[in-house]
Structure formats: C-alpha cells, structure tokens
Length: 87
Image (cartoon, rainbow, N blue to C red; front, side, top):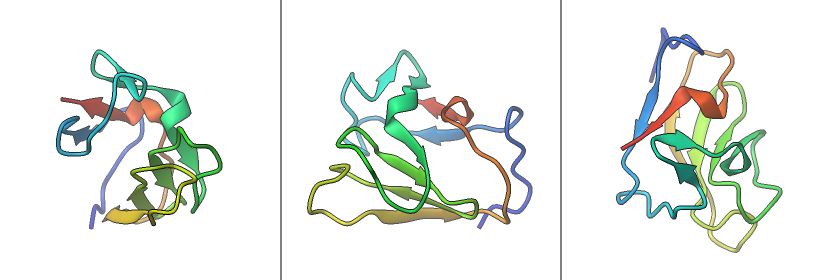
C-alpha cells in the first residue's frame, strides 16, 4: 500500500526485465503512454499498466487471455505514464 504518492513528484520504479517489458513499452527510462491506461482493464494489446484511481495493475499481454495482477494499492489520486521510471 502506498499512502503518500504525489503524481509529478514521486515515481514508480519498474524493472524492465522483471516485467518482461519490450522496447515498445518504454524509451530510455520513460514508459510509453500507449503502455498505460486509466481504468481497470486493458483496451488495447499495448496496455501493460492499468490504474483505476486506487489500484495499479500489470497486464502481461494487454487485451490477451492472461489476467492482470495487482502491483500496489494507492490511497487514491492521479497517476500518469510520466510517473514511472523504467530501470
């Protein structure tokens, strides 16, 4: 659980190899906007990180058959693709 996350100030650090991210999901250390969605489900094959306002999820195959998994719970708020740091 994360209780004090501030979008634009804090970062969620993601290990690219641990999450099997490809070069299309990020450039340098920045998550591509196409890999992030506000909502509880992926709506394209590119969506990897889903945020519904309180739960951050990882979806290994976007709209594929594999279900998303919870990474963390936040005490509400805003999150954007710019809040990620890909290591």
